[in-house]
Length: 111
Length: 115
Image 1 (spheres, helix red, strand yellow):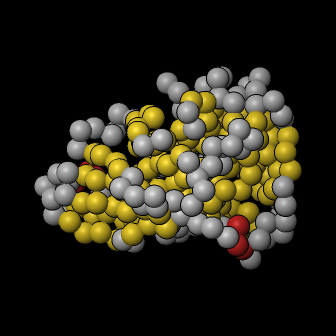
Image 2 (cartoon, chains in turn yellow, cyan):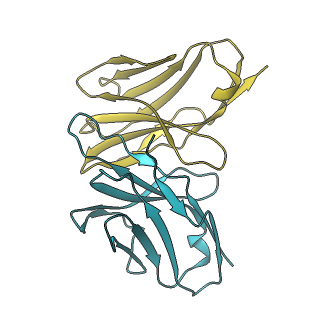
């Protein structure tokens, strides 16, 4: 079926290290991808997006990589901070702005 | 910075009762959405709304669900006869629909508990 999923449900990372969160998608027609961060008790918060005609996009401390050949998306967080502890979701869009979310990766930053 | 707001933050209701969840999308946005998230699970799409009509809905959005934009600012989700399995966080989202970005802005959510 058409779905977006994350490889690992949890990720523990030392403060200051880089984090890499992975996501696999199955719909080759998807043309837009977003990474969201969700803190406890809050709604998803936009981090960064990328269109299918790109393979890399950088933001502040975050980089998204898109590999359309293997339908893989990743989020890299540089110099991870305690405030980065959250659940991270990738989401894809291919039809009328509907977003299909993956299962989420819980990132825990160790001091 | 403009934001999506939702009320109430927590709604407790008995099975079979009707509930209305309210959202105020960002004022210049044109597309509106409802999503739900069962505890510990992923966010699931329910419905999208544009130009005063539903543009797409998921299989979850059955006849018990309805949406409405009663005025120029509010966007509501009604569940006519709640079931235990409707217990979840319900998120409203909106986007301005620009071609450059489909970024959807999410509200803080309403936690619905059906007892």
